[in-house]
Amino acid sequence: MSSLNEALWVLLLGSLLGLELIGKVPPTLHTPLMSGANAISGITILASLSLISQAQGNQPLLLLGAISLGFALFNVVGGFLVTDRMLAMFGRKKSGAGR
Image 1 (cartoon, helix red, strand yellow):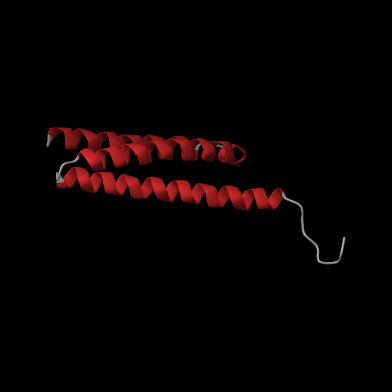
Image 2 (cartoon, rainbow, N blue to C red; image 1 turned 60 degrees about the vertical axis):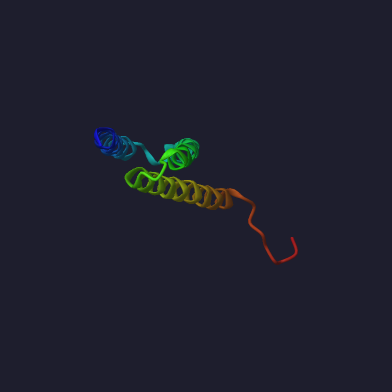
């Protein structure tokens, strides 16, 4: 149970530090940071799947793995959707006037 408490403290402190760091980033740097966040979330997905596979019926670890997997998937999918939308803003405009 001690390792679960330590893991929750690391999660809490890491979340607060991440929130503080991202809040100070200027808007022009958000797109490069989003691609980096997607890469980190990919690693988080692998770690979550590893945690779930090695939990061996330990309910708190299964729950923590499932929650981290859900958040990481949400971040990756959201990042790709936002990136796709931003790329569409810079793409050629299609006109129906035969140009």
